[in-house]
Image 1 (cartoon, one colour):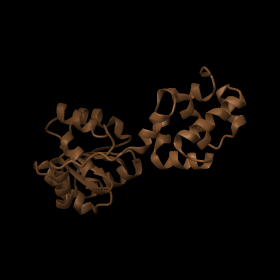
Image 2: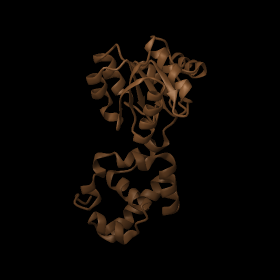
Image 3: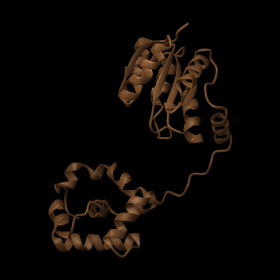
Length: 237
């Protein structure tokens, strides 16, 4: 007997291709939707037997929040996470959120179907080696690595962080000064302070270090790096 399914993935073509393949094998696919941000609402409304929920970043914090909500409001729905080759931490997070299993994006349709049937039957639907890694991670969590990007970010003032981002974007002193609404001499001083604090001798080295450590990604998420600040409406200090 076919399974009532939902396929939800940020990649619409992938979701539709998988939905079509499952329909050809006799399953009733209720929807193939994107993006995954709306997955919980769709699943709660339609109440399938099994939901295939796609993700590209299984270890990202909060990525499995839709699973938590689905299991809270529709506990009878089995959720299978569909994603890339995961880390043990990603697998552990999926199960901790309430997922019934994890299927790799490149799994053959026969493997996906087996996982679906296991999930509907209430069994763990995940390759043994992935499950073993997840349990090992839960029982013996690895120590968090030293976050060099965060350490470097804490050394810089908000204005210096903005200067660093502009340096990484290839702006020279004149453009930095114009974009931030400060004098070129002030911009030059900020640049020199950034280089000194990062322990590098050139703008190129500073940009490379910031990119390598993830400092630029962290800086872009900070409140003071809003578009208003970047266009120079913030106060000079």
